View 1 (cartoon, each protein chain N blue to C red):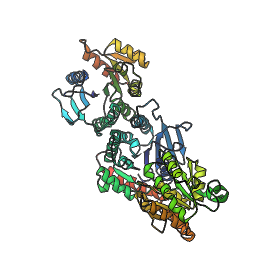
View 2 (cartoon, rainbow over the protein chains, first blue to last red; view 1 turned 120 degrees about the vertical axis):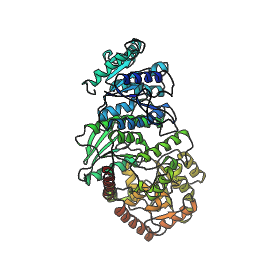
View 3 (cartoon, each protein chain N blue to C red; view 1 turned 30 degrees about the horizontal axis):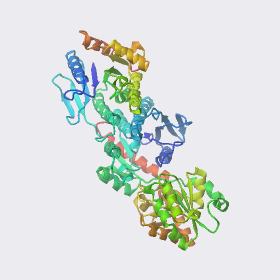
Length: 207
Length: 402
């Protein structure tokens, strides 16, 4: 199975808990014989590397250096994500799924799905409603619209807790059976991840 | 390959959505490309009342959700709109029975959509740069302007070829983004001479009377009332023109300089000689251009100068400032009169010269019309554009993406 992880933070660039989580995930996936690619952002450590954990990692910088906000920064970075994903895809024309962490690279995953039929899993670490405490300024609304797009287009969704699953259902009206709980705090964590991947890659076509 | 070339054209405006010059450009270019056997899929922003898909003279037009949630500001909206456009264009290109051969983007307003589609489909991207941020703003001063400038630079970097509508723009774009010569192509903008046929059949004298009295010559300005279009240079030239000829100055368009221009006119006590019409509907505008004695384009910055071409198509004599694309459109004393940019004395001299010599006026307007028929003809432009498409696809076929 060939999987790409999209995450906007990854060691050595650590912003929150997502960097360590995706690093642990990539390490475990490689151990379980999954061909694992990571696409992430770094302002200057750009290019393709084979990390000690065995995941093929590509770090991209933003082609546009000056920005008026997080949204324009994210929306220009997504084209670089697409470029790298296409570079992984085209030699063999086979990517089983993309695992997307939070909203930042949802636009790229959505385009790749529509253009090339690659299904994606939207793995939710946090939601804009919680981060912004319900503020409904246009900036927050725009981020929420990207989260919504992710829920709408994803083949499946993972949440780290029952509470988060209920929040996704409450805020975005996503049917509960589309959301899988994958909690890093349980012993069976990596097996839950692998089972979710197998369900998507094992026959299910992009929605 | 040459017989059924398929192009996906991205534009943020297409009729009936008309904001600036890109909309008519893409309309006529795609239509004329269809005539020479290119299959064009236009992907553009939606518009109230316009269908999401229609076929116009062989061109497939798709109007996509232009992102209607609230946006923090215009520039952020552009990138959000591009996210939607890219998604819908990707879905469309994937389900077409035949593959798209190349993507053609118009200006930074569709930059990220074009760049993304290029990479996911691995097809060449072409861009037409109609204008630049550094040109519009005389430099990049704010964070927004810098961001747009860098987005334009990125777009031209990702493009296989960069098309500009005048030699002036080729030099400007080369300088602004540091591009190599062989990446740049000059294909002029076109004008539709048939647009004026109806207007020409109708009588001018009665129509004209609602703008000027019979003994007044009619001097016409058409353009946004913004600094770079130079309406203030024209207004300041009025007293000098009036020393020699009796004329009425009709100023069509709106913009942030309207009040300021109005104030200058009043301070000179010339309210009776100047008429601000605001934005005019197309029929009235075409008739006005046909009936004007002289059309003035006093721009300070002008990448191309479509309004001068339109005036020439309407067989009106033109006086233009010798700058940018206008310098190339008009040959001095032959197809029009060129004056020094941002110079009221020079502009007044040019207008006076045309208005006080009827033989000269008739001659330059005839020559001007002949020139636009020969050089700014959409069918000719479509053929040149097709040739560029074919040469790009020839190079592409030898690349590892093919």
